[in-house]
Image (cartoon, rainbow, N blue to C red; front, top):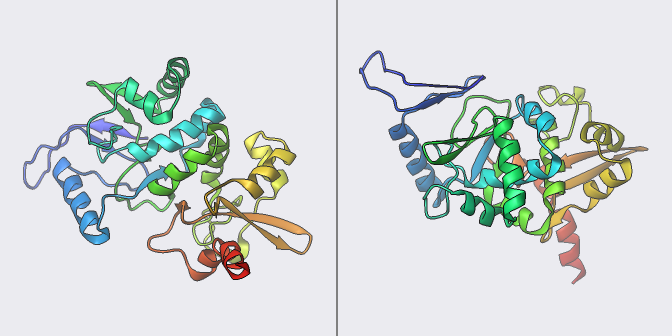
Length: 275
């Protein structure tokens, strides 16, 4: 479980600032180290950090306490978290209640219920005038933990502009089931041998998400933004299973492999050929 402590480096005597200690091998860092890491990402990519991180083993705790719609809002708000886990505006100032309301494009009553549920569930903390995401569930930065999934900021921002929050909450519930090697929605996402992957059917997904099979199938086939689909359906004989778009959510380092890239671009390639 994540803790917040003040630490002292035993070798240098340096006093760490308020530091989150994360579960499952995540690193403890000073503010200076986080800033240095951010600078290296700018150099490597030509722009600032482009993904946030979700702790797959822990978000069951969120899903049990938070409504689908609020899970959707949470998925979008991750796009605005900094290395200190503080929600911040594009100009790097900390978000106020009004900023969160404007960012989510919701009214005051909805905002009140959202923040109340988030704080009661321990997902968002308000301290020293700042709203902070609990890094037990979501954070930005480097990690040695492999039981995590990356959320690509630019893509989720596009998705939020075209998909309602409840549908985003449906997507959020499936992040804990994404396989490391294949991006398949499965029952055993930490299985290393792809020959032993147990894909989830639409019936399985309906049971896990509390959504009717008909609605699940509609979401799996139709959720999209622009020309990008969130899921791909794989037909194997009479069976069907699903993969999530690796350009939106991905667990491995680097680029998705050629098979995954093709799977999520081939529909567009057919459309180009037809014109």
